[in-house]
Length: 419
Image (tube, rainbow, N blue to C red; front, top):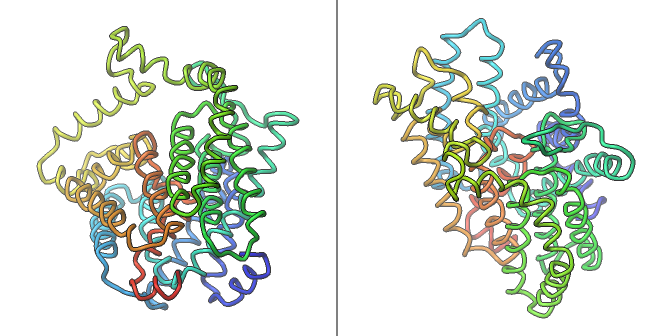
């Protein structure tokens, strides 16, 4: 989608959608002012953007229709939203004077409402492409920060487990990770498509440029989840592109093998090995199992013990119903999104969430290869990230993921017409 095509698409959107498109574009800049929350949460640009987004989501639900209402994915989201909304209302009622309580509720409900918003915005592949290209445009700001840090001087360096991480102007390393990997997913999707407003040469250059920048940045991030998701997306691209052009895929794979032969060992020793050193010591018996995954296993064991000691009612419907719940069990303190969903909505919510992921995966064969890759890459990224991060709380990531989910909900007759 060329800029002029994107501009025409943008101008056709209703005002509510236009406002949110601007929020996507400006999100990296908005998130760069996260530290304003130390003065007051109400002065924090990310918090203000979150409240504005929530208003847009709610108003759109009542103003705009849904294409192909009532799919299995819609029903899963409706159940998850109902469980989460009731739980958050109870949670707020017990801590009504705490701003942190409202912040927790806002960030927990927003990703669910975003899906309902996108179900009204995305009515064709053109709408999907518009959102994805908007995300790529927003990544230009991130690219500028990355270039400055790599070429001139790091803006912010944080030491974690003895390893230094560049975080730029963001709150944590996940922001870099999101823009790197989602840009890779989107550029590979456009490259895999047979037809596009962009020339084939431009799409190749775009994909190679994003991958090259990612490979340059990753050793400075020291973030295993980023490496795992990027590797998954690149390997998946090769697998799906084989369905389109075996010759092109073999050339790229051969080039990748050549690069790995020259640089693979040094990359492994300098970047990957320090990150998995603790885990290898755990598996060899030199360290306790609780220290696996950088100590997350010990945290999960403690949290799971606390969860399993609660009433069976709270275990099935979520800890937000409990009068003495700690907010870190409902929010990002779990460092695992499957656990966060379980603690927030109970065993019922986790079951519905797993059914949701399953329903997304079984729809993949209904699409052509480019869309198969996009859906598989999105769902796979969610699963991989969920192991060590509460990823659904990161709105920049969900701006891409929920757009793909909304596409899957379109009926097959529209898939034939548009795809």
